[in-house]
Amino acid sequence: MSDDIFEWPVRVYYEDTDAQGIVYYANYFRFMERARTEWLRALGIDQSALLNDERRMFVVVRTHATFVTPARFNDTLVVTARLAGQTRASFDIEQNVYRDGRDGELLLRGGVKAALLDADSLRPGRVPASFFEGN
Image (tube, rainbow, N blue to C red; front, side):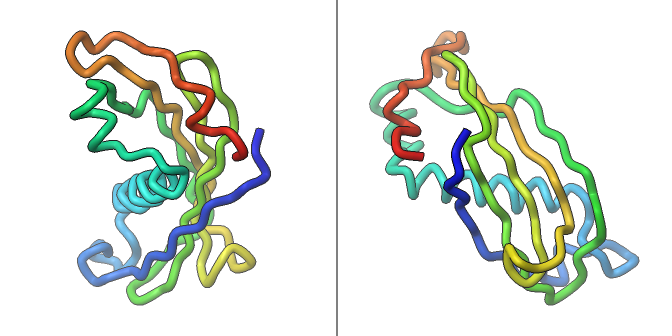
């Protein structure tokens, strides 16, 4: 849907690795979450204001990942986020993880489907088109 790819740098710390010295699989989802949060911030979406002022919040509905090759301690990674599709109440974000920048080695291919909910009723709400205009 969008050709604009957001990039977020990550360095692998010792705490991110497992007993074999590679990044523990669940930590990739933490890296992806941080990249999504920063991507939304770069789009001008303040999630705190969205929750506190408008009583709306984003929730992850589905996630997927294909692990291609592992990252290791001290690697420099880039996690990407790109709007891949949107419906009235949800949107799909394509996310990939690369070693040494987006031109580097692909480590993970994945993404999430997120929905916008009313924070009080937990019912789906409409995702404003303005959230992703120009993206």
